[in-house]
Length: 202
Image (cartoon, rainbow, N blue to C red; front, top):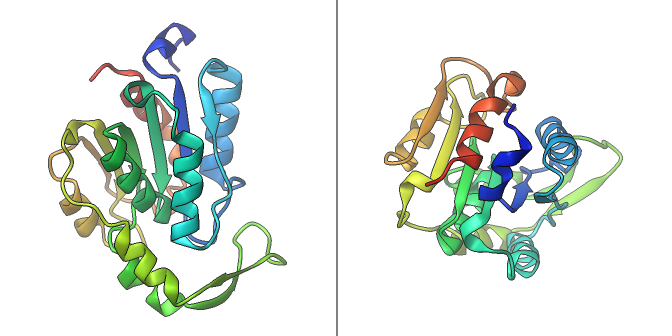
């Protein structure tokens, strides 16, 4: 684990969860605990995102509008990785993408309707048809500084195609896991590498 002295290069971090997920996910909870205990001087924000991509993007922009872009970072998993890609492109800030969704407008079209959430089966969410077009509006092109975008990709991802993920970010640093899964069940093993990227000067 890195020492607290390195946090001068990082002041703000936002974590964006995936589809049907929440701040209670394993990765989000682990990182929330880590930053709270080890990097208390770094402003950490892990919001519950609304199902609407338009509303999610507005929430993200409102909260981060006054953040220092040169010392902030965004971390996103799955659909959150798609949102993180959009935010990093907009702000030209650092990003860590964990098995990021590449074309959610295509992939989520079959999920229109009501769903339970992963962490509370009694909690329901509705994914509306209009959200597909909202996702299309958030798609971005190439990065101005691709070295600021780090992708953690599992070949064993059972939801997304790892080849499509690696092909989306060809010029940035990548950690491609030979196995693992969509949720990155061995996430703990890779935290030191993610922290190294977050706190390094670029």
